[in-house]
Image (cartoon, rainbow, N blue to C red; front, side, top):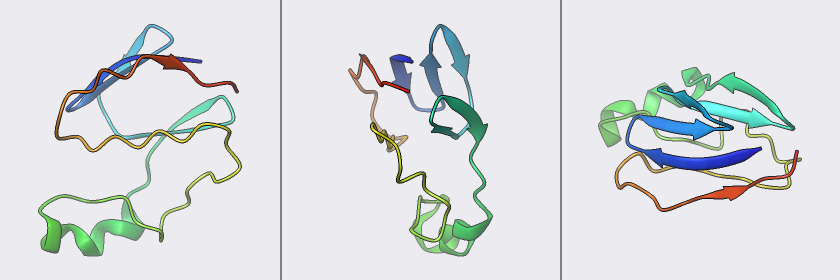
Length: 79
């Protein structure tokens, strides 16, 4: 699985651009379920990732984007 480019609001995985928050767990791409972190929205001005979400800790590569600054991240995560 290749992460070629990501920036505020978009990420390119294996040539497909996604414009939403994602969770990639062992090769499967799912939309991020933010409900558990919504209570932090008022404090931070956005819905931050929190330990209350179901984070796939069994991964070999964990990528968390801040959504603020463009990144020069290009790489491969083994699935």
